[in-house]
Length: 218
Length: 200
Image 1 (tube, each protein chain N blue to C red):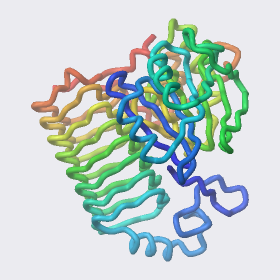
Image 2: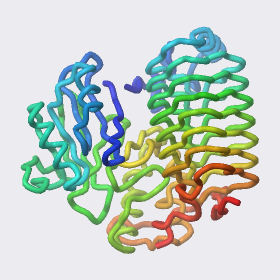
Image 3: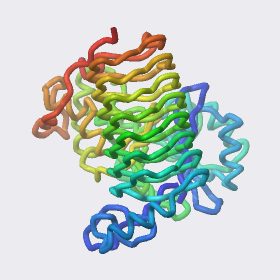
Image 4: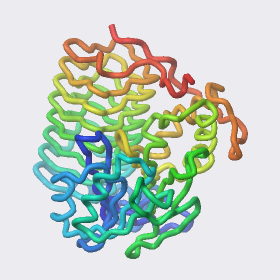
């Protein structure tokens, strides 16, 4: 299995391409702009995009998916039954997909937004907008943030340290790094994010060497 | 494109080192493994899907080489020359770099999070979309580099210089900065302080 990351300069977001070693049917995660670089990446690796996984049904995906469907005969998977007017196959928490021999597990890591889904493929976790490297995704309110924190602690930070986190925005990370730097984990222990939600448990302990607030540059 | 071959030792979840069926911890001949890795690596080469996690590599010249989807997690590099190297989707988490040259580096989608970087030269580099969260960096320089979209969240930087760098969309949230210079850099376009999400 091969993994490629593509950065869209239009939307400043990441899109990921996963496929077999020697080309063939491939999976695209979170396309937001179907630009020439992405097309070249797909074609130069002899891939045929058959499945598109969307982590959050946002209108940002509409243009890319529309264009993509003119080029490839792909099935769209998402946390809801449609993205704006485009029909999708809805996948919920715990769903298992076998796409061209690649096992995909869907999990809700947001704790509050039922249509936001992360996808786990082997030791890769596509977290979309909900969890980025060293930073949580934006939430509508403080309660949603506490739900996200509790859910991330239970479902993401419990994964093996070497699990690769591949977010929609920002660089990739690993669970091991996030456990020591993510505010969802470290701040939780300091009580900066209220504990809450169905996944709530005991507060996390901050690492003993947790850094203090940063200083502004001189 | 990363290798997902697991260690053959019962119950071990780590990845097997390239050229072995075991991870470094379970290898019966770790010295031999390191020697083989050192022999394989060299300048002006192209490498993909290597896993040399936890190995110690010393005094190597890897200049102008290209690494794609390679793992060097918890590896130790001493006096290694990475100048003009290209890194794509490589994982160096919790690695240590001592007295290494990483100048004119071309890095994208690469992870240096949690790593220790001492007395290293990362000048004149393109370090884009690169994760340096939680890194402990001392007596090193990133001068004249483009760090667009890279992150230093919760990093500890001591006597590190970012002279004339592009810091657009670079995050230094919760970072500890001691004797860090941003002279001639656009630090106004970077983010400092605590993460506003955590501050809610």
